Image 1 (tube, one colour):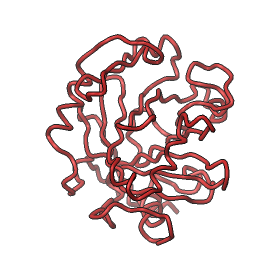
Image 2 (tube, helix red, strand yellow):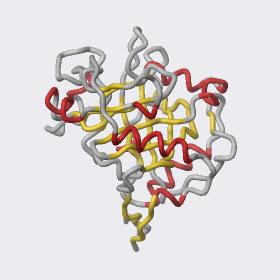
Image 3 (cartoon, one colour):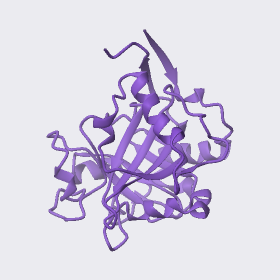
Length: 255
């Protein structure tokens, strides 16, 4: 049986009117700038943050989003290979140029409208600290507590995710390990987050067992070059400016 669900079913008091208004301004305002600042502008104030998707898509039509984590260096376009080649952006940057650091990307199995249960966003951890190298910092409790929001901008929408978990795991593809098209697969991933209490795993206070298969997650993933373990930072959708995020949740038996 299938039931429909909205992100708003989350019951925790995590989003403020100020945050929502900030993203409304971001979706509606515009400015010009330079580097992928060529297509992204702002002065650090979220209310002035703007992503010029028209310009970005002229640079590379595979660019569909922009990820920004306030007070970090994570501020990049997000791509998906139009050819369905999940390996392409492992060694090409967001302009399709050969680059050993790669780009910030999602796999072909995820949807660009961010309406999947779990949108897995990949990025490498270069020695220069760029891309997703900063995810390791979320494994420190103080840093985790001080960095609570992930912003993802789409063409015509802006989303707020509340960071509720960060930990290391074996380097196994989440989209292969779990079938997120069924509620049972969604719950299995949540059981991984909540069920195994390991040293170094952080779950935000008040969020223990709070997220359900009806909600929407984003998982930021990188591989630690030293340990070869996967570092994941997981956020739950708490704000959807355009009100476009929705899906059916399939509670039937996948067998």
